[in-house]
Length: 344
Image (cartoon, rainbow, N blue to C red; front, side, top):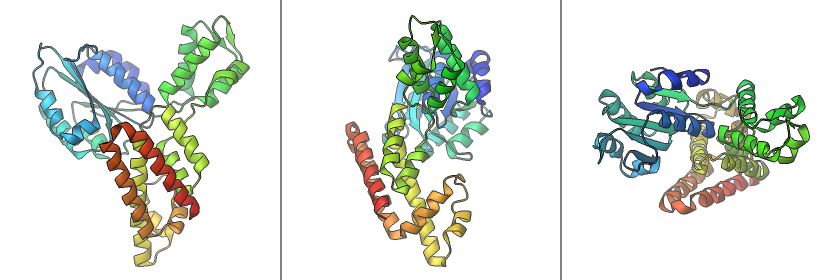
């Protein structure tokens, strides 16, 4: 089944969602991914308080046992009835895609599966597999636009019996929108702050609302490559506030340094300028990021980029071995890489 566009989701949820059993929810807005996955889970009718009916898995659980999804899907519940398998933190793991293909061909009748994934590029394994399968629903979740934010503001404030002035609304629009859950939490905090009033004024917004505007993993990686510790810490603060996994940043940073190594090797072996290599190996990069990558190509050698990639890979291994320290290890490693870039 083709992907469900953002403006189609509400209608799909009400009319058609119960007809499907496999869902892949993905996108850069982690809060919206989580919110829509929760709505789909509720729509299945499976009791979310019953540990025998709801099986929650992190992608790390499947990494340790790559056949577990198929085993869980095929297992018969202790007390019968439908069950829901809810997977979080997916990206493009081939074993997950293979398991989904097998389930798509022969899905157990009493099982629902909801997968939460990050920002899947067009043509990536998991996204392509979901979009082309007849019985898998792909649901992208991008940052709210102005129309969606206005609707969110109206819904949250009207439920609290509050109005809002145009100036206050404009101030709100500038401060929210990076993550659906963070935006909703800020609006509820504002409603609580203004309880007993009839209308929210601009000064109420500036007094209480934090900065929950859009920022992505790429922003953090770009700050690392630019050697800007201030921008890096600001990006990480917003990423953590939006409940985005810090692991996604270190994973994206590793991929970026692996790409830098490949690009720099191509430049050194064929004596090519950075701009020419960008047209081949970097053609998939967003145009706004290309100047940052070109600058990194001038400051990092292939050997240095390879060393940094190996260090990031070792840090990722440490986060898996010491899960309780995952965020601390990732932050310390990424800040060190930022300072390395600054020195260069």
